[in-house]
Length: 227
Image 1: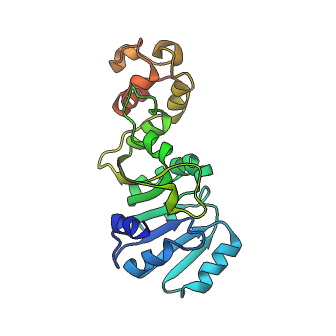
Image 2: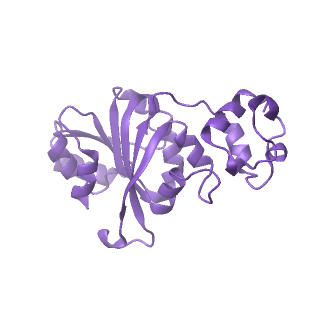
């Protein structure tokens, strides 16, 4: 499974590759074998020290830091992000790294299957929500393959999947406050969920519900909002 993930990333010597949450380095080693060098962000001081001792500094640079607060703009544009993201913070971490979409070449993450399905969900489906819209406004995304529980030791209680995110050439501008308000009342009609929006000007039927709108619809609503 590690080889399959590395093949999906397909790193090369010219890549500026950054791994989030390397842990004990199960994926770090195979990535370095292909890319030659790697930057890693690890919160745990003991794990960070162990990684730094395992690989020479010209192969691995370890940043002992919280990825949720890390400034990825310190890295060169065109960086590639990869990692088995901590499942308990995966959603806020995805929102955080999405802010750097214009500086990223691509991202490959292993996540809980449920989260990946939310990321790639279509409008008017149960999995479609704020995360779907926010990411689809910036990225073309593809669920690459599932990872069974048996690939982990010890096996987790949830299924996992690997997803690829590639920044869109033209990203949509969506007001996050509007998006948050809309999906806090996803079952209400838009005119009740978003009272400060000019739906006629946006060309949106106010009788629809937040879960029915595409990212493009939310971009139009953001241009006609007084929230």
